[in-house]
Every structure is written in C-alpha cells, then in structure tokens.
Image 1 (tube, rainbow, N blue to C red):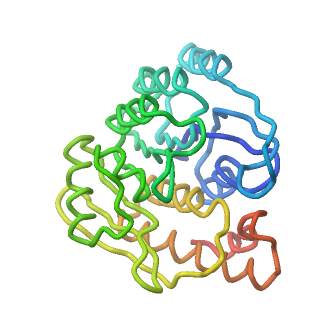
Image 2 (cartoon, rainbow, N blue to C red; image 1 turned 180 degrees about the vertical axis):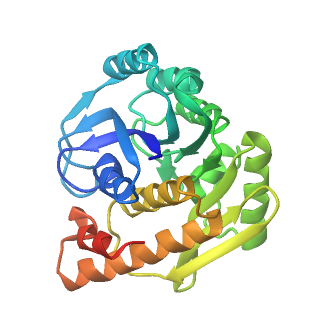
Length: 271
C-alpha cells in the first residue's frame, strides 16, 4: 500500500525551498504527499529582498479540523518553518489526531543559523518548538538550533565530544533521534546522528557556494527515505550524496545561488 505523508511548512511562490522542494522529492519516492502551508511568501528569504507574506494561521487551524472531520491520518508527518507562535502551539496540540497508528514524525526545528535567531523567532517560539520536538521520532536541528533547544550558549567551535553531548542531551529531552546538520570540519561538512544508542558522523566535501534550500532538501529526503524503510544512517548518506550531485550540476549549469539547487533531472536517476 502506498505511504501517505503530510508536510507542514512555508511555501515560496518563487525560489526553491520548503514545500516547493518537499513535494517533488518526497513524491519521487512513491509517497503520496499532502501539504499544509504555514505561510505564503512571494519569494524565499535568501537573496530576493523582502518578500510579500500571507499568514495562514487561521486557514491551517481550520484545515486540520477538516482533516479530522474526514478522518485523515498520515503515515508520516514532516514539519519545517511555522509562521507564528499560535500556529505551532495549535499544531503541537493537534498532531496526534492526524497521525496513523505507526506514523513517522520528523521535525526540522527552523529557528536560526550561524548563532542567531531568524527574524521573528522569539524565545517563546523556541520553547514551543521544543514542545513539538517532543512529539517527533526524528529531529534535524542545525548546530545553532541544537544549542538553543538545549538551553546552552552557542559555540561555533564546538568539538565533536561537545556536539555528541548536545545530541544525547537533546535526545534525553525529546526522546527523538537526533540528526545535527551543518557541522563543518575543515574542508568537509556533514551531520552527526544519535539514534538513542549509537552515534554516527557522515561528512562530504564542502562547496564554497552557499545555495539556498539545501537543508530543506536534506530533511525532505531523510524523511522520505526513512518512511520507506531505509535505516537512518543510510538515509543521511543518500541525502548528502544527492545534495553533492545537485550542487555540482547547479554550478556546471551556472544557476544563480539564490535560485537554489538544480536537482529535478537527478530524480530520474533515482536515489
């Protein structure tokens, strides 16, 4: 039987990120993906100036009520950016009502990067994101978000032992498997995985360009692959390898960084 999933995050009308990446990537794995936009943007926020924004808090709350009325339950739920505090509180309260019995929940706790919170993200918002993480089976914070969720001061030079201790701490808080992304080690970049028992590191060659939406591609693929039954470490390796290929193709095709990765044709080759 075909797996079903719901992705809850922002939708940019132009520029690849969030739902515009989740839809083709997760669908290419044979998963029937439904979406719930948390905010509509004219463009993504990485290089196109200040976007026009339409909040969807009222709509999303009523959409969930409609899902419940129709007894819609999803085998997997994957969340990213939320538009406001009320929205994340409501979804945290309602997520159990739209989960299938053995569902997979992945939360990408979008809060900040490079030691700083994103615009509009408050400490109260971060606390509610932590509550949502407690509903998850897997969480994919970057290093900034990991420190924040653990209640510790950001250290961009944190060594591996420190990052492992943060992963274990975050697991003990949330009981979710932890994938910490964007860890840089010299000329390499990768992720650290704590699966409740063991710790793994997955690294690949770092590319100098900073393409928007790579984190969304990573979370989408990891979610979809694990929902299909791929082990967590293998899913992370496959997602990382795909991003590496997409970066090379984007550079070779002279695609502007702000447009995101040119990944569509790679989907024909499979994962």
